[in-house]
Image 1 (tube, helix red, strand yellow):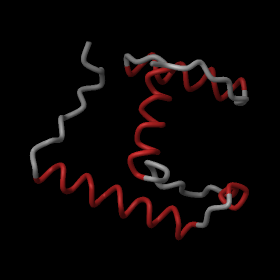
Image 2 (cartoon, helix red, strand yellow; image 1 turned 180 degrees about the vertical axis):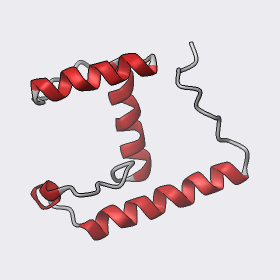
Image 3 (tube, helix red, strand yellow; image 1 turned 135 degrees about the vertical axis):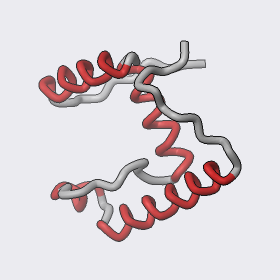
Length: 94
């Protein structure tokens, strides 16, 4: 089951992100779904926000970001050891 949601995002950022998604062969919906899935799985951001001055606006600290990164790295390392990682070829499988 899916749900349609609305978020306010800077129009220029949306246009630029749509272009990147197109270059990767994915839709913005797929990109956002992947982001949300990783956010939930990791219990934090699935990337390290570097030079992100607004971090405090979201009630997070760089220590929180680093802890989330360490947790993600541990999980990726475990997946790699178990042979569960698939090389990304620039396009999502159909």
